[in-house]
Image 1 (cartoon, rainbow, N blue to C red):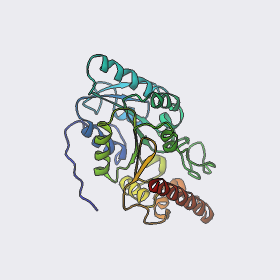
Image 2 (tube, one colour):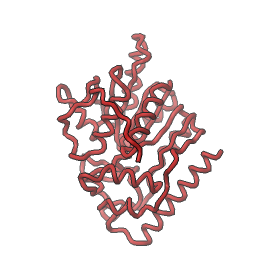
Image 3 (tube, rainbow, N blue to C red):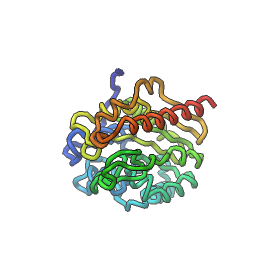
Image 4 (tube, helix red, strand yellow):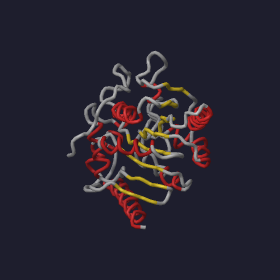
Length: 290
């Protein structure tokens, strides 16, 4: 296991109200310290909004605008244009949203921003559900996962937002995990150096929503990477795919076993999920080869 190469710059404060052991708070610390002080944040209603509460209770040192669930990308676009009009072209506009505000309610605004290639850095903390309103399913929820609105398990696959955004041909798309903090910081800095729309997905195992032990969020995230459930990848220009080496070394069973939302699965259910992961992995590798 690699040593974490991380230096805290004081951009994320203690005393926030995230769940004890929350991987989103850990990821937010790394992200905020990577982007630095010359940043303006936009946050959609989500767990991020709870952590980055209103002044003077925010855990972030940067200025943060709290917007509506459907308009985060649009708000970020407007702020970036206002900063450019002031000659502050190098100020980063950082948009923080959950999967509900990205895959579902905020998809129109994000797609429009991507089509215009707005110069924003958009982070989706993907905990695969509406976790701070009762744990209901979103279109990011995987098949068979039990949620507040699908107690017997979701019957459809997770929406492939990676392919949807790649079709927009934006400059940079990436996935990263709280189990790989060096990779996360590197991708944030790389995205910050690119002009245009950049979108990064961070898998966040939700302790109450997924039924994960308080001390097991990072372990669960690592198992997600190592089983190929959540591959760490980059897509540049919508066509150039890169996958971080050393992934997909085991079956998905250990990953599923960490989560109560999958405790109802049969062997047949597990086989179907494994086949979906294998299919996605093969497709990604074919894109890398191209």
